[in-house]
Image (tube, rainbow, N blue to C red):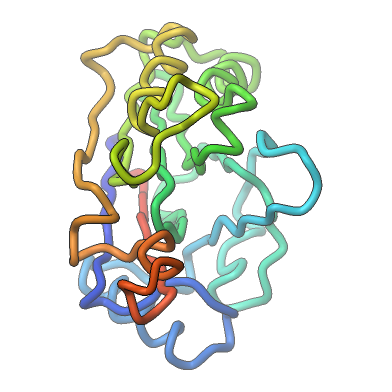
Length: 220
């Protein structure tokens, strides 16, 4: 089986909000339909910055279908993994990396949020370690896609000698044993690309809406 993934843009509207927010729900439904997907089957990865643990993982099953999309969100994690096919996973973003990880040999895959908080806690490496422990994955068999993110000029990571989010994420993934050729990067800078939302731009007053684009991935 293969993983397909899609990224929304500003023209699709914001993808973050309560499941019963009519605008957000309409935006999501339209985006899903555009890619021949159904919201009813999807699962939202909801993020929270409460506490001090930003590398929280779990493996989920079919009982979560619709969670955060058509019912209230109950998944407050930094990464979710599954073996399910035909079940889209959705992660809203605005400057941080959304990672899609896939071990085709074990039909295991998931999505992960990789921002400054996660990377400071070695999130890139620990996601791979989780797949090793949970699914018996071999790091060299894992394919990773990294979404667009804020670039180094606007969002340098001071904890990592001012490297970019992408640079640090790749270093951590390779430290865990992922092969460089198995890492695909969307090199767009969310702070410079008008097709993508940016929380940094909103705070700076250069973006009117504090919106979120999203990545949606599915195994088929």
